[in-house]
Image 1: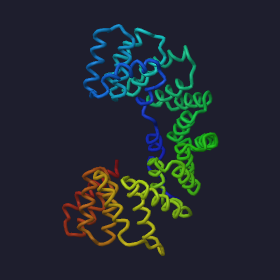
Image 2 (image 1 turned 30 degrees about the vertical axis):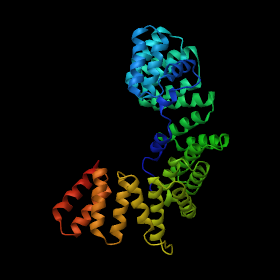
Image 3 (image 1 turned 90 degrees about the vertical axis):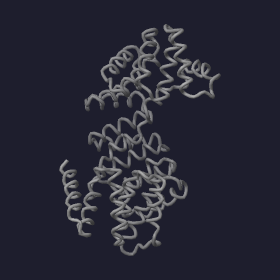
Image 4 (image 1 turned 135 degrees about the vertical axis):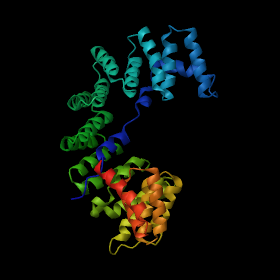
Amino acid sequence: MTKPLPLATAQFRAGFAEPRPKEAVRTFWPVLLFCAAALAGVAGEDAARREKTLLDEVRIHSDSFQANRVLGEFYIQQHRLSAAIPYLEKARQIDLSNYENAYDLALAYLQTGLTAKSRDVITGLLKEKDRAELHNLLGDVEEAEGHVDQAAQQYETAARMDPSEKNLFDLGSDLMLHRGFEPALKVFTFATERYPQSAKLRVGLGIARYSLGQYDDAVASLCQAVDLDPRDTKALDFLGKMYDVSPRFATEVTQRLAHFVQSYPDNAAAHYYYAISLRKRKLAPGLNEPPGQAEMHLLRAVQLNPAYADAHFELGLLYEDEKQDAKAIEQYQLAIKLHSDLSKAHYRLGRLYQKSGQPALARKEFQEFEGLEAK
């Protein structure tokens, strides 16, 4: 049986989860109209000058809900949540009834690790307004505190109240995160029927199928996700990692990866995964590719992203296969420099040091490998 994709479900949720600070900026809120008006005259100023303008406004009108709220929103937009909290708190003290400000404050608390405070705000809001988005947010709090069952209950409540794309996604991904693969499959099957044009739900369906060993169906779902949104590199990322689990769809996957490289020639991941697919086809009997293509795409990947440790490692494997040991050693060294806990790179480098008559260096790399594997 094919070895499960490492951390597949965790990577899936992390890869597709929308940033909470961005989510807090709701353009329909009346207060943001005030914010836009306040900043309209300084559109050409940098963030520091905007901040000074808003801070001056708060000093002059310290008891103004709008002044504190707008400054808090400014810090949220700058991803400075710790700075935003005091002003959101002050705005909440001035107007306890403002739902949007309280919701943003709960988000900021959650994102800065103040889960108990976030819970207090959310439960207070739930007493006034029993909304699906509040149950979803409370699910995030429960998850952050390690309360698995309570988190699942809140996500399910949110999805039942409002079976939106987001709520169904969060429920399904939370189930997968805790190995509830069969119920997750049911959720994503329902979700993709309800939202057939959603690429990320289609990826969720693919990951659920993969986790249950349904490899052909998993790859088919991921191919559909890439077709739905070719610009979404996350779907491509999972498809690339699953390339070899379904021989039946190997050619289709390679074709999609090739198309992605053509459409997005400056995407390092696209070049990397296409090179991987070419390498595997080349190493398979009877599937010869033009010489040098895989190397060309891997070199392009590290040119676009010099910190791409996996691409450097794959270049090392390619050069080692071609008996170019000096080049392979260089690439493994680069991979380790970028990603010191890449155990397979330590092992490969140790073998090449041993082969080249450098026992001390080989011993050091093997020790690193054994230590990482023990962890």
